[in-house]
Image (tube, rainbow, N blue to C red; front, top):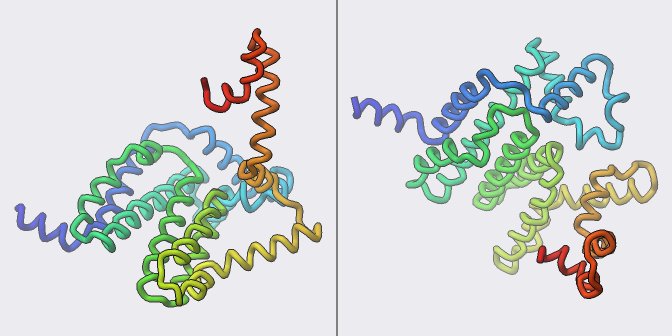
Length: 279
């Protein structure tokens, strides 16, 4: 019996085992659970899209960033004739299974002997497994981000343009789920800028970053000319990355706190430090 199980596991492989095991865990997790708050929002947006488009629900400038998952759910539900909730759960289960398989695949490329251990870890880690019963954007973000990393590793070994292009496209799709994926573009370019021999750096940085660089120039032209309004979330991220804006916010909050909380002069003068360091 043990010999048969060992042979079956060897034939299945850790990557496929992680994919199938993740699907089974997701099936068990969704039994008897209500839809989470974010999931309700996505399902209602998807229903609005099916009933008459998103013009009344989502601003056009925010459409790509806020409504990609609901639009995807609505499109798949329309094609398959499956309910919106079940479509979302199936889609998330597939993204999660792909994420687990990619984590194991990435580990196997670097440490083949640890692949089965990685399979057990990804199926048991509470950090993301505890959300299997919820409808979230993070599943698509995780899947396409890890797909981009896997393709980047293959490109680094093969130096073929195909992997480089697919890697950048995968990150672009991940960005449609969560805008934080944009940060991985400069990370990949810095990886090549400092991790390869000096004579190859420029070429390899351009190969792994030509699509985001072209996108930056195109976005700058469109936003600068006024042909396209800057999405509010993009402005929010730029403000969050601006240290001067962060300092201004802290100073304003410190002024309000010193007037409302602190009685003594010295405490009021140090309100900014107290707020920042949590003293």
